[in-house]
Length: 510
Image (cartoon, rainbow, N blue to C red; front, side, top):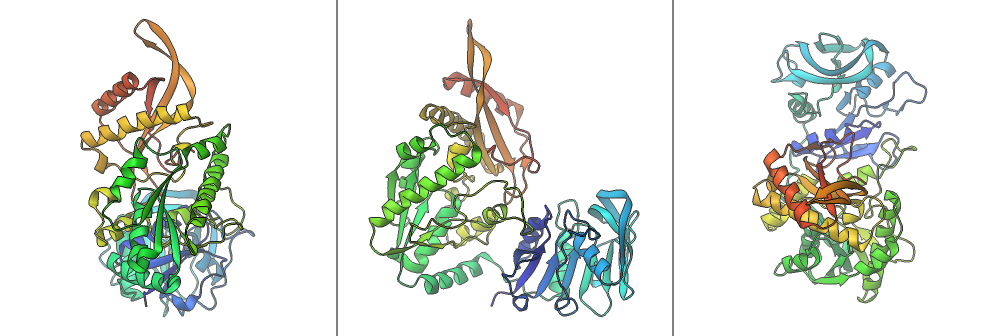
């Protein structure tokens, strides 16, 4: 059985990064809200407590019961997690005189401490807290300090319980991955068996048992996620998988035809359905981002319902949902929270559609999906395709959607993507696309004044979409691409480039 690590989420913006780093060590982990009842602690080899926007001293702060865990299971508290351990087991946490945020360096590391094996004094770490541990519990041992934070790391004597007031999961903690490896591999003795090949083997076997001889319908998009999901399902149930590729009228230029051609020879049973007119009709006049997503999701389900009725005895709808989709659609702390965005492939089906859902990729990050695809020997060019949102250009056209706006953006997007490929930049970018703004701007073409659309080009680098930085594309490339768009696409007279990172911005504009 796959050995697992449990991460309890207290609402930190970095919780997903902890999971990513653990996965990089070929160790499988799962994230649950701190108050979730959906896990059994006996199924895990180690537990990590995340950071949190709360103070442990506040009445509304999370207060999980660790009495059946601490001292029995290797436990690591990160930032809030460390302060929670100290606060609840005899130590003292108080407000720091100055907010401890940003880069710091270890000024003291206890000699021969396995937790810091191969980590030297002066190693850079990343702090992010306004409280600090003033006094450690009596049975604790100090194992690391920085110049400003005395109790930067501690362990409880005769237990595999550790606390650190910095974030090992972020890039700025230079030896963060090594620290996590020391805790998980050397202390908790978790086996590093989480590999693409092992995922394929266990997932195919699980799907065979789960689906047996049932028929499954899957929506293909031409992207990495749905393709990898389709191949996994095909290996498990063969001809019982029916793939449908829906043209929602919001795809990239010529994508409907190109995707259908792309799947020829892959051994998949694929049917193309052109429902573009139906989607555009339903979207008419809707300008709210969430409203558009919900309409696209609803019509998507309705089209599938229509198509599923044409097939015999279909019992399952397969989806290419991945872990960031699930995470971003849930409250991090299990309580009220503002929705960042809804995902049309998360959250179940309406009652009228009598299909169960199967999501073979829902525990994978995007880069892990690609590695699984490579293990499945899927074409490298297909696996290298940039992510494309399920709602398509519908969330890249700000404001209401019309057929004319879709055509304009398709042309702009095609020029941008093809230019990246021709310049050898496409594979250096994680995701790229264009946005159509709901504003006109004044321009001059020849001797005439114009009042036409402005478009935004967006290119980011990332590993999983949870965080992203804008790509510093060469000025010459941007100049040529801008000129080509304005000269070739009627209705556009201004091109701008988005230099926002995620967070605080999102990758998509809606």
